[in-house]
Length: 508
Image (cartoon, rainbow, N blue to C red):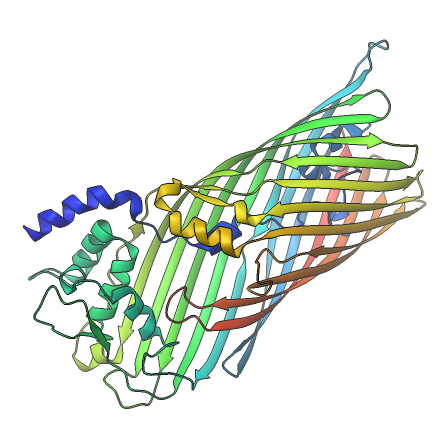
């Protein structure tokens, strides 16, 4: 009978079974300066310039600036360094990656009707990697400040999920395997009950009355003292965008454009916490591992314009709609404790892939204003200002994500981005540089800090073909907890992201 009840509840509760949180909403709402080497050399300050395939991804009117059909392809070498501090421990990791991060073409059609104010039309398609999720870091430290509730140990994570739940809802039935129970509990009650189940079955948690299925009180099978944490984080994947572009030049001074964008997400993350203590309790080792796989697709649009205010001065205006994502997620978990070894029991490795119900995410809209001063064929200077209110991100259906959306609204903030770039031309060479500053998307300004970045590049024009190379780097600080419950003491993470981008551009 109990099994039938569980299956019945699973059907009713399915829309509520989610493990999404504020970090997911922020991850897919942010974008980086990617694209061609010339675009990156100016730190993305291209909103009033156009004439570059990645500029089209910022302001769709930019393709109408091309005098003839144009294409470009870019590759990127990423090198990232992460320095961490955690409870007195320091660690550093460094890794690199190679990818194709941009490609596209725009085709120009001139209007032969000289009496029409519409001078030319363009259509094109452009791929840009908007975010790179390659990341790898490690943190270690000794927590000497543990109270009787075992805050900031992994035991408190399981306790926070279990406290108040009936024992019968987080334990195996007679004759039921760990894998079957884990799957059934997840289907019936969701992620939180599964975490409580892991804590109980691993002997981390002890029910006050183990013979009562209605028991809702639990103790932690640890002794006070020092706890050593070794934590590793690895992520891979990217967020990409394909823009279908249409633009036109009206008269001599006005360019208009629209992008219809198709977005796609491919993200994987694995974490491992190894906690040890020499405090003499039942459990002195805990090995907890989690993996997440996320895939998704979305749609957005952009409308933009570039206006020549004078021969030298240009103004750009762009509106980026929200991106409407449809996302699917899968997770796996593994848990091992010294008590399982002492009892000669297998580790808790259910071998179950939790497949969560498909959900929606609406990211915030963005507004960008741009100014550029162009000195003939000698050079230019350009400035972009963008604003995005991350507090407007929403999980949907909103009724199923009330707590998450309230947290987004209260903790995330409106953030501005400032980009400045310049270019000087000497014969066939172009010398470029840029700077950008992005405000923190958090109200507290520390969970994710401000971003500072700079860029330097050079290009050579062969005539119909141009080769460009750019080095850019940014720095950002984070205060990231290992988990969103229980073990929440932040890891201080200093990230330095360096890139070398090579582009080949040519007229068609």
